[in-house]
Length: 538
Image (tube, rainbow, N blue to C red; front, side, top):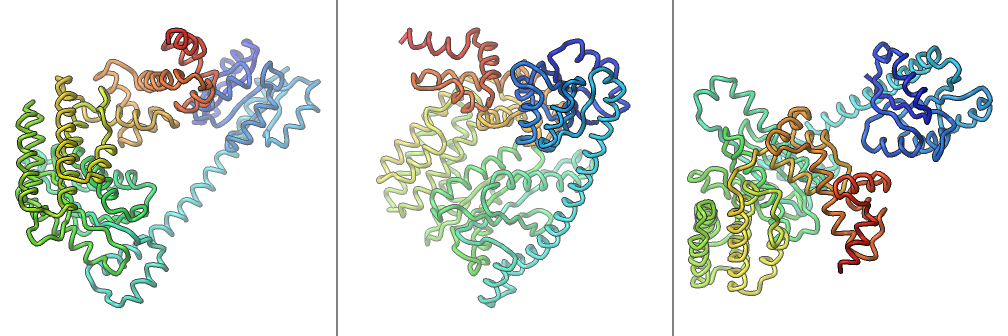
């Protein structure tokens, strides 16, 4: 089915076009209507339109101006112009905007089907052409991916020892292996007679595929390669910007803990993750792989576990050693509402480091790990509100820049106390899908955002997401997006120098008129009135 928008300032014409044309026979659906070009432009930001049927003469923005806008911004949309006899020669100037047909208003119900058929034929041809191009690209990419994966597996296993060959093949295949980490993921299936009775192999494959999708999204802006080492393990090779090891380790811990949280809520698989040191080029790829695997030595004793490799004689930070146990115990105390015991556990750990003169970088990595456990626990219990006093990135930055173990102690005590306060304000555990939805809204409210985009991110059906969210929260996703945008807009409007159109764009609403409409709906006043009231009160 193709989506149609009707644009006309005459209600009779709009009604007639909707009622007297059998759109289903034309494989079309009238998705929305507008009274002029300005309304149509607004709607194009919220609806996926294939064909526009528009009058040529309308107040505000007429049909020609609308055709120009569509040609510049939505070239895939087919435009059909409704015109009177007197306008016909004038309407021909719209050819430069690639308008596909003109329909005389005196008898549109006979001519519209022919124009629509012409539009759908063009759309079908374009879709077929795009599909062929995409299939060809996919075939090329699949072949290249297979060759790259075979090469990397051989390099990881040390089967290619010639340095010149390693470097040249990396360049030929377009692989970016500078300033990278190896991340080793091991997926263990929980024993469950019910799970084994319902095609466990397929479920396992789907879960691994979900992890791959998550990693692809999480590292969308970085060179990334994911290798299937066997049916239960993945090796991720990801290049990080700038080569700053502490900052990159922080990012990897954050993403790793999101994967562990996902595994915990599915309750069918345990995931253990090992992270290597930073490596500079392909020559040390076998070593990076070995480091990531060695980081998982302690996973025998733990489920849903993340560890960072550290080369130190005492192996203070290898899996199974105190920081990981301490992080788990601190999280456990917080879950039980025992923040004093959590702080006591932290003090014991850091005092041990003070006494043994543990290397500074090792201590900081341990603190990053404890912080990641706290934030992972927090995200599972209260992802949307209230907000923490300090963001995750801010806490990690403070840890990295600390000049003494006492400063590290103070930072983590504040974090534990903040977590305890936030967790004390919630008595229920929200549905995991709702948590992910709310988190995505908070992080992307200022971008193009709708139900389908959120559903694609969570990898579930949009209709199911809409029903589930409404059932759990009592609100629609669109209402929550708009409310959050308006709350952010209020903060920006309090700045005397802010302009309404700038605030609208900053919160993800590109059209100022639509922003005013949404703002008024949720606040009972226009943005300008809100600015005036706020300035008078202050």
